[in-house]
Image: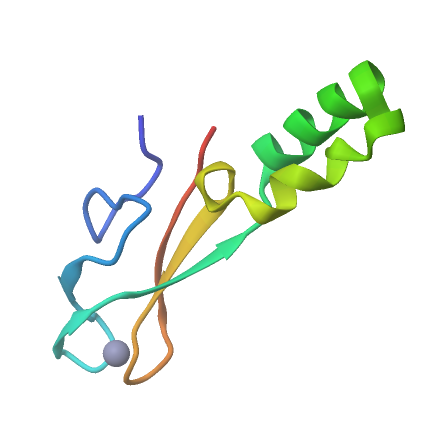
Length: 84
Ligand SMILES: [Zn+2]
């Protein structure tokens, strides 16, 4: 379940949303950041095969990252989609 309260369900891709700050209907800007799952995934790979250096791969995979939605106009953070 999502822990978001005011802006409704957010996914990991841009959504059209009413910004609570500037009251414009905007297409949210999504920034991906390495979240908890990324580190867990990285840690798992690290213990399984760090020799291959593949523990760095998750940081390149947006699918494993948290998606932060921001308003493109006023830069207000509209919500964060977490993988966990
Ligand atoms: Zn705004």
